Amino acid sequence: MDLETNVRAVRQRIEAACARAGRDPNEITLVAVTKGQPPESVCAAAALGLTLFGENKVQEAKAKIPLCPGRARWHMVGHLQTNKCRDAVGLFEMIQSVDSLRLAEELNRRAEQAAKTMPILLEVNAVGEASKFGCRPDQLLADLDRINALPRLEIQGLMTVPPWAIDPEKVRPVFRQMRELKARCEQLLGAPLPHLSMGMTGDFEVAIEEGATLVRIGTALFGARPRAGA
Picture 1 (cartoon, rainbow, N blue to C red):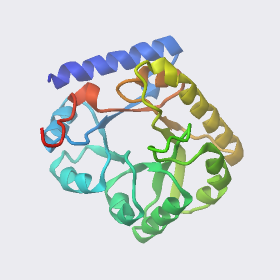
Picture 2 (spheres, helix red, strand yellow):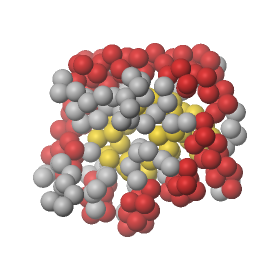
Picture 3 (cartoon, rainbow, N blue to C red):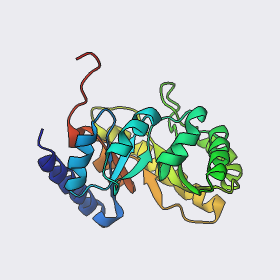
Picture 4 (tube, rainbow, N blue to C red):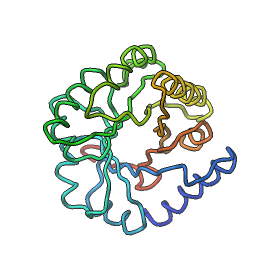
């Protein structure tokens, strides 16, 4: 696995997708997802100019982050349990996976204790997959005002994990729906939401064409994660 080659290839794919969509590549932030990767991989990625990293589990992040370069910035991109909110508030500069009013309320409480304002994204389960976390679009719209009223949280946009598909074109309607939902939220809040986090290794180009500002890439950078017991 040649990380330098992979980083260059991903950046070129981002630029090509932006060219097709008439977007500025500077509008896209690459989140290097380091689930299952050792601190050495983060150090190597940081040396190549990557600055923003995503972790899926609080416990893994808690062990890994102290061993990584201090200039690295961290987002929580996996499912967050309420009993891990205190640690998450301390470890991450953004929580991308706020999937319920209850979780938002607990994050707000922990951020208050830490005297910190926590940027968040609201995770949407756009098509109601039973195996995925995230709130349904109608529930999001119903809870939006109450989440927005929480004084220690700052809603910066939406996030989704679309259904898996061999052909990324099959998930384009989901990404388009997310862009439209973000516009609806902006209308209700009367303020812009800068971020739309969507797109991973298999579909990030289509996500960029449909408005993503954050793409969460693991496999295309670091290769396939080793299977448990392998």
